[in-house]
Amino acid sequence: MNTIEFISPINGDMLHSYDGLVEKGTLYTIVKVKAPLQHLIVINGVEARERKGVFEAQITLSDYENSVEVHDRTTGENQQITVFWLPNFAGHYRLSIDDNIWFLRDIHQNSARYTSIFDNEYLVFLKQVHDTYGTKIHLNLFYETEGFNLSQLTDKYNSEWTANADWLRLSFHARGEFPDMPYRTAGYQQVADDCELVKNEIRRFAGEAVMGPVTTLHWGEATVEGSRALRDAGYVGQLGYFNVDDDLFAVSYYLTVEQRRQVKKRFVWHDTQEGITFVRSSIVIDKKELPDIVPHLDNYANLPSGLPPYVDFLVHEQYFYPFYEAYQPDFRDRILTCVQWATDKGYTPAFLGDCIL
Image (tube, rainbow, N blue to C red):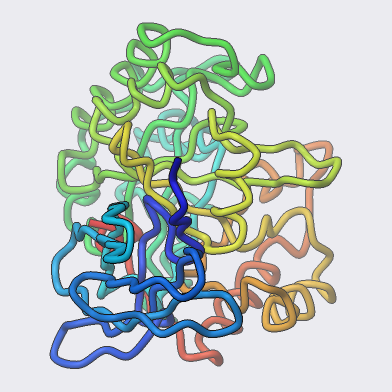
């Protein structure tokens, strides 16, 4: 019978500078475990002190992957977990946009007269956000929409995509917008095939430089086989909402309720069995009215999670367009409000992939 229980961190936790004191690249952090009272408990070689029924010891983490070992010298019992140290995670933000395809259709339809990808109204706005704030922007792409698919897009702008890869990323999102939750019950091969379809086209028209190790799956629902397919395609970071204990869509891939609670609380968690890192988005911009955005973000300080260590601002492309039935005329203002909030709070731009690996 196991009598040692990890309280914090737990297996798969990814620790960052908010979790302790950082000196010369090393994190000093507190490990808390439950164990029988009056036993001699040692954590990574450090004798733990008992406080109100919980044993605590300060340990150091200096590697990406670390073992935390608890030894009960009274009984000889040993327990071990794996945790991760992310020195570049906390204090950064990005803008991520889902459901992207219409701006690429526009570039295709106007390729004879567009001399630059930034002749497109949507993309030039995003470049203005970057030019003003330095924001890193990640676009998750559909393969097809009405009257267009990525195979039709010209590669004549390839060098321009590459030239802007320092702030712009492209990745797989889904084959198309419909049906809803297309991969909720999908097997490995379906996800792998659709993912490769999009990745091959990105590689062709934009080049490798704009690709990275993170994506957001459409609706964020997958079987473990589907998430494995994404991982094997290079997407070891998978972003979602990780809603739990409410009536909202979970948007949490294959994770259990307890795992979702952990991601919701900590914003990041690594499935050590599958080798996948899950990251929680901080806000879905198009789901908040403009006056509610700053109060929503500020309110994190009052929640158990605290302010997000890494802020992911998520929005969907279609709300940009006047022809869309749910067009949001303040689309630009919502994004600028978020980015200004991050800037005011001291967050700096960084691609998520650069922060979790």
